[in-house]
Image (cartoon, rainbow, N blue to C red; front, side, top):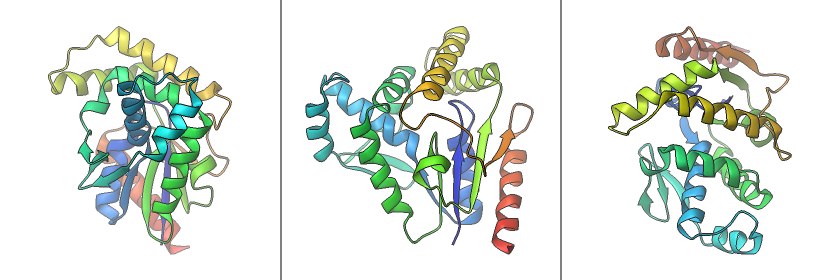
Length: 218
């Protein structure tokens, strides 16, 4: 059994890389960022403010989040595309700082990873969710490189976007993630840093697959 934890800032390509590595190695892929986005989407739809902790706790008890065929399912509905907007990204960052939200989702994530091989990406997987993961990667890239990737992704889906705005939002998100009180974004002491600024997707995937092979042999 092998569990791979991939952490890193927004736009570093964690989800794309994790999916491809998971496919190559036959691991179940768990997109934790999508889970926080799904919660942000639901709480926003319900018009619940971040300081209304009682309402948040009540709604979380009635919330179902699951994965099926590479899609994230929120209360029975596929919300994979809806949660990829910049608005939902900002909401995810806000709600992810709430202890009740993190506790609920971390519990789900740990249960999914119990007893089977998985690859999981997020911002505190190696430092909090799967602290005993066999392989930990801290995936990062220059902020403008990440902004350009996000910009091109949105444009390819027909979504209007402004590169400068996305760059500012990514830098703001980085600051929030690294300075939040609860499980801030930080490289785990036993994680390998991988800067993908000048790497192709295939190069990154092959590098991680090679790392996993070495871990499995030990």
